[in-house]
Amino acid sequence: MLTSFLLSGLMLCGCSSGEGSTAAANPAQQTAPPKVTTTAAQNGAVVVTLASATPGATVYYTVDGSTPTASSPQYFAPFLVASNLTVKAVAIASGSSASNVISQSFAPNIPSGTLVWADEFTNSTGANAQPNPLVWTYDTGNSGFGNHELEDYCAWGSSASPCNPASPSAYISADGYLHIVAQQTSPGVYTSARMKTQGLFSFQYGRFEVRAQAPEAQGYWPAAWLLGNNISTVNWPACGEQDVLERVNAAKTPDWNEGSVHGTGFTGDVGLGTVFNFPSGQTAAGWHTYGMIWTPGSVTYYIDNPATPYVTYTTASLKSLSGATWPFDAGQSNFILLNLAVGGDWPGPPDASTPFPSQLVVDYVRIFTN
Image (cartoon, rainbow, N blue to C red; front, side, top):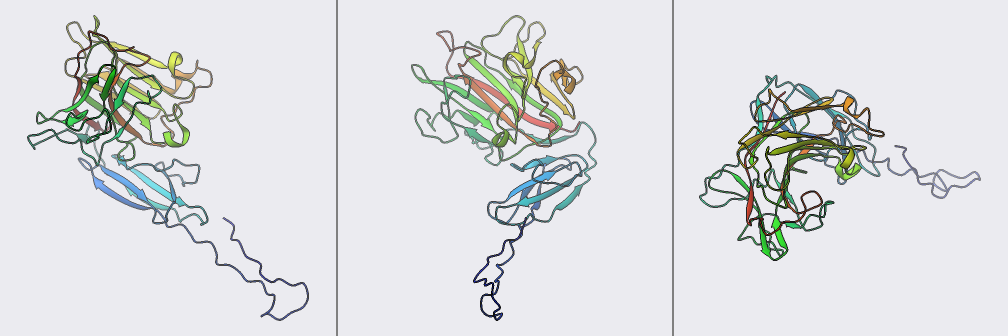
């Protein structure tokens, strides 16, 4: 960044140094370099936080050894490090020169298939407990969320009508499960919850699992999915979306789940989605493990057994889609969402057959090394 100078009293005639001289302003301040802090995850993995002491500074970082610039991924949230890599970061603030680049290497040498992060939703209080506020936050309100959904999403403890803290929409019961509850508070008025780790936790690459029981009735739309941290700068769908658990309405024969990926040029009718049919006698209302294996250039989905995936999407999957851009290797990490929608464009509204309350029940969320 160029250093600016203030010209004060400059005269074109000969004069003394004390009169009409050029007075230089102070050079621009340099942005404070990012500081790397870590907290332990599991089995040698850590969660990395980056922060500059300069107010308003934006931090950019890389994990591939390249030098970060303002074109590198922007830091939005703590991210999991479970492989051998080097984090490099720079901080940039308006009116200041860029910071020095900092670099920190990690060599956890964690074997493939190792559990490196989890929320097991434990609760020893004997009463309904708040989901960990260091991990989970909430989308709230009744904006329809781009799908004309009918529910009001409620945060923990919210008393904003129609939310009721005495009947929470998301809680950890003494049974050790997370419950996301759809309720009908009055005719045509519904509440539920959309939990997310946005701004609090994220990861790039690994094997992701959610063990869950899904509600099955007209108008229900349960989901476990991921979005890119960069959604606040590039918006959806450029940030990328990975749908691990997603289905609508009552059980079918055979019953099903759909695994999808979305990005620029492949959403809606031109999206990439594949239906998994459960074996005879099984439904999504039973306990199942919904999994994703995310590697560079590839997203794979499975149910119950990672050794038997039902679909793999790669960069080659976009070849026939005009204007499609693969968003999953741009360097950013992704955050996790768990929600139960009521109504919307895909399922349609609930009807007289729809039971209230109903729940998406989650046993755990886990991440393993590839």
